[in-house]
Amino acid sequence: MCRAYGYVYQYNKNIHHDNNYITTYFRQIDARRRKRRQRHLLPLRRGEYVNFVFPFKMKLQGEERETAARTLYTCLPFIAIFIIVFGLSQTLGRILAIINKAAYVTYTFSSQHKIDFVIEGTGFFPKVLRNTIGRLNSSSVLEHNVDNSMCVPKPHLLTAAQYWVLGFKIALILLTPVLQAYMNRLPRAIAAFFFPKREKVRVLYMYNMYLRKRAAYAKLKRRQVMLNAKRMEFMMSSFIGIFYRHCKFLRRFLVRRCLVCNSRETTDSYVCRTPDCDAVYCRQCWKDMDRYCFACMPKDEFISDASESDYEFKEY
Image (cartoon, rainbow, N blue to C red; front, side, top):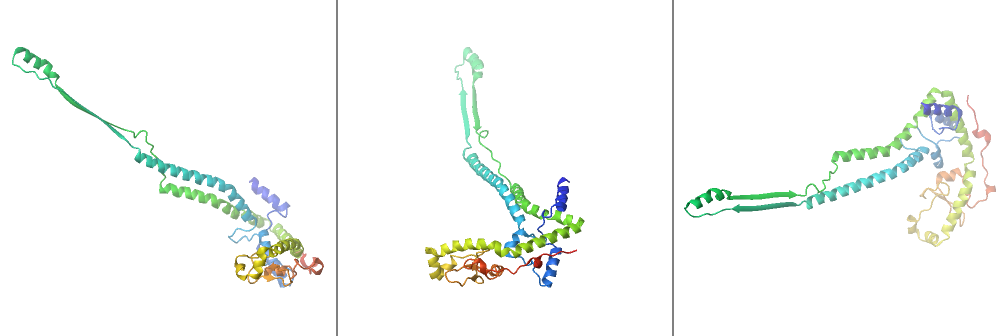
């Protein structure tokens, strides 16, 4: 109850709280602006997917993936310790089972004795002796078996059913962060059902905010492009870069990447045609940069066509 109350309070007071979902209303706004031929957000740029969550997609997205990964990282040491202990117990169990079979020893003690008095004669005293001492004649066989079964270890290995139970518990531990990510989508949907006007305000604010960021995207990425271009220039001037330029068969092993989104170079990628530049852009990033290569062109030649009136708007 306290957590639900806290979420509703943050939902109504903090417009940034849990406000990163591409909802139906978000798509409607984007469709209207596209119809009017104004700036719009959809489809998202490659670097923007980490900031949004599509609530009807099964794949973990953005912060959900990071949260689930952090939770899994905290669980992995305990699972690793459990697996190590489980493996050691199985190894020791098998070793003790071998010892139980090989170290079992049986000791047999046997003895046999016989007492036989032979009295000969027919007189009075021989008869008396045969009746007295002759009764002491006896014979016995003693046999006693002893083993070390009380000392030999008797390990009990896990059954197949117990293996399945342990595997199910480990799988449940690994799936819990993923299920938690899906469950975290429900509070926003429930709050939007009970506060529809507040939901519209939140979506409008988020849409306007990312329109501003989209307009300033090229300026924000310019410094990153220049740093990446310096690293690539150093690599291309190195021994490996010389081989890359002159030995085409090595290009399948030495793959260049986009200076903006760091994606692998493909046949559709754009390579700057300026001599001694060789900057690589994927097609989407080349369009986002308004077809200007910041790695070799000065900043003054870049003119942004964004204006405040183009992306700020209100709906009532």
